Image 1: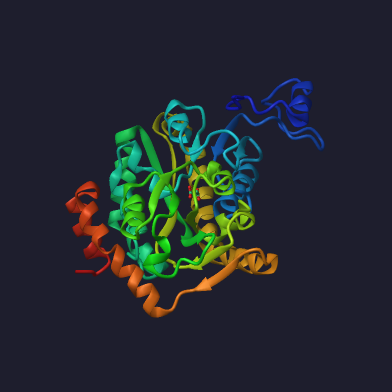
Image 2: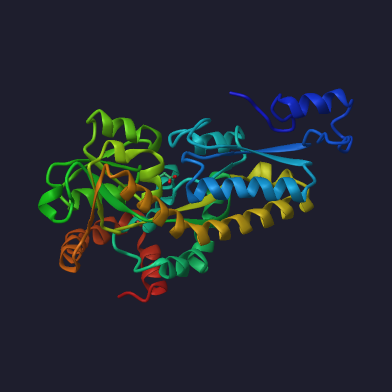
Length: 342
Ligand code: SIN
């Protein structure tokens, strides 16, 4: 694995900068100096997803605004680290920014993040905002300091759908299916409540597991389903919209504190703008992916009737009770208060 911080990858640009004699020199005509700092941003999804596009926008903003003194190297598609090791890589300083889904914080000792996984919790993205932009969101991000991390903000992918090689419209359709899930106890409990068997797998292994029959189905927003070509190995996508998938961008405390205050402010500003951008485009990206999926014609798309959705919702209601202790009773009551739920 290549370390790029403070050095930049050995490419044409850095070679020319070296020839120019000094990293600190400003650009020669048509030649950009090698960045003094290079941030490494690792993520597990494709570049055409809300997260991929936000990461690329962040790179452009930081590099432009710093006059290319600060570089950003984005590693999509788990090129560098996958679900199992990206957080550890961040804690060790092997990367500088990651944006895991909120479902992946439980296993590093922050189970309260799994509240976002509670099925049928959010009626829409406005309800999500009441948490992410409110005091609860702030408290969640502050909690990351327990792991030596700094939480810089939340952003959306969107609502998840269910896929398999059959429609998933009624409880009986889930019976005995092995469903790939993220490492979240809440999502595992949701699958059990539906009668399926949860199988935890990293995102990057999901398509292969579906193709080889290691698992029968999975859940994800359509942009992830489409960009991983899961439509080639799943004949049916049921638009259940049963849960939310969002992200938190995190960095390492040591790294963050060692930045010059002006650089920190520039990076943070660029990041906040990129997250706002991701939130603006997330819905569109999912709609586009659905359209592309329809055109591909490989996968049947099913809309659920109101009664069918109500029955699934009913079946997973016990998950809130079952997982309240894991998430934490205080978090649960604050959550309900913020969402005006009893
Ligand atoms: C992601 O969107 O980052 C991956 C979600 C998953 O693991 O299903």
